[in-house]
Length: 182
Figure 1 (spheres, rainbow, N blue to C red):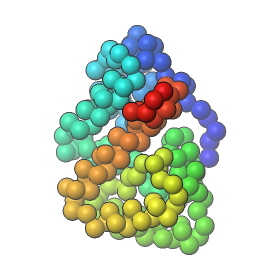
Figure 2 (cartoon, rainbow, N blue to C red):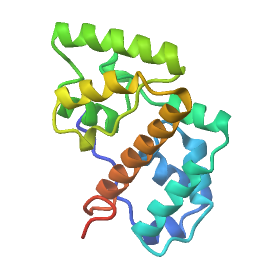
Figure 3 (tube, rainbow, N blue to C red):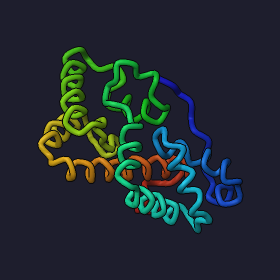
């Protein structure tokens, strides 16, 4: 797991940056989706972090079906076989709950859940780990969401992506979670 901390994000610096630099500044917020970071950067200027978060939500919500799949497929599975290939943010998020190196029985269970989920929905299971208290809560969500209809699950997965991205944005801008008092 990496201890590398992302560069803090200033809304003023983001607004003043070139499009390429602004997209690079937003890249840690959106999992391996530089095209999405660029699209969000096009919505500048932002008055504050809340306005940036609103643009992020609106941009994700407005994605076409093929773009939604591209975004969802950029996310890692839970407890992947090679955790070092995840982004630093994903390593930290999964590491907090022991998913970077789970016990063998948990790894086997997650492998099977990942397989079933990917087969059913064609993208990895995505959950906002920052909002999960423990691994039991994650596993309960994982098993329950396997029963969702595909359209329901895609909407849920996208809402989880928004939650992850806004939590990352809050960390990068040095504040509490978006929507909470700073």
